[in-house]
Length: 456
Image (tube, rainbow, N blue to C red; front, side, top):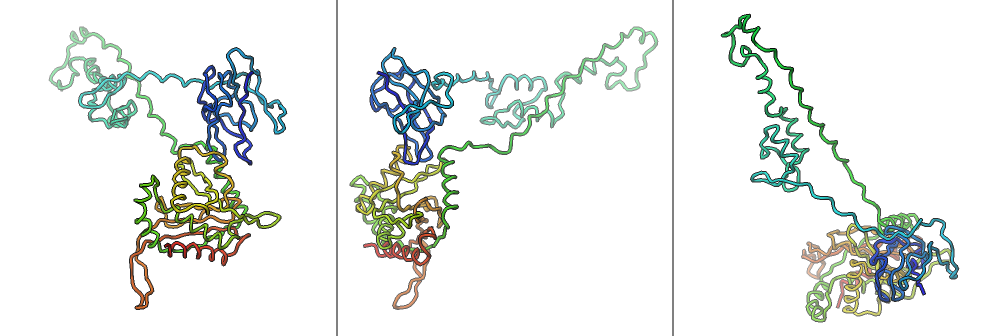
């Protein structure tokens, strides 16, 4: 019996997904739970696996199609089994709904077109290869290509380079001046001057000059300059980030407070323990320290672990910490470390390494980026000292971590003020002013500061 493959519901608020890439083709045999395709939503990119073993009988939509959850996208079964001619959608109650717009036929992803045959090239002596067209033009104009600046790969002289050189030098094809001189009668040849005057007999014997050869066509105008910009298509992730950031700024009145923290004790602990962590197969970073300090402050000031609702402020009793992870030019994703208060330092280091690695490999599950109650973004990894992050809605606040760097600071001692070198960091808290005020935010950050500066 044929088995339908439908666009999954990848999260509570996700209503559609985009087919990024088919991993199998029609007619291929697949095993149960073997990946069939990659699907991208506004939150995550994930693989859709085969619900049963069988042959991929039909693909209804090509790569790039954006479809609502529940839409039939493919059918598995045994060779020769009948499959639906038209895709459909399965509603929440299991009812079959017709699609408003249906492709005329199944549209498996076409194979990429064959690469065009490379243009034959020749090699000029002592230089990179050139095309026959360039070689012919250079011969016609008597040009030494070593004198022509090349803008092609490896300094190769292109046709455009050669035309520009010809235009600058105002060159004529080789043989054109000689041909014009050959058309002149002998007494008008260069160098004769006034030494020779023809008689009437010579004039009668001199044949009439041939019709002048047509002038060579002018070189084509140089190509139009390229457009001074390029347009980068918006990915689903980039579009979702833009919408989320705009919505957050419109939803919550953002306020940011900045604290300076002496990281001397944390850095001493880090240096003393990272080798031991590595022997356990765990790479220690500073992120687990900031998570533990944030959790301690959330326990001391639970109002920060909350969200705004029309019914009132909802304060969460679990500490699910979101960790912003950069995906490079694609944007960022925020995996959630659930019940972060239940981990030791080495446990947090292990889970941080895991979620960061899987986030960058696009292997996070949809449920792993949902349900956070507080977010930390470590923008200092790229050298930033401090920033004013945007709240990850619907949370109350987000803490930004700048670069830890050594600098001179003034310390108060019983003997008086002294100047010392300390590893310092700027921490920021951007918060929803509807939920908390500056005094509460500063109290929260003072607790974070105290935990880090008195790390035991």
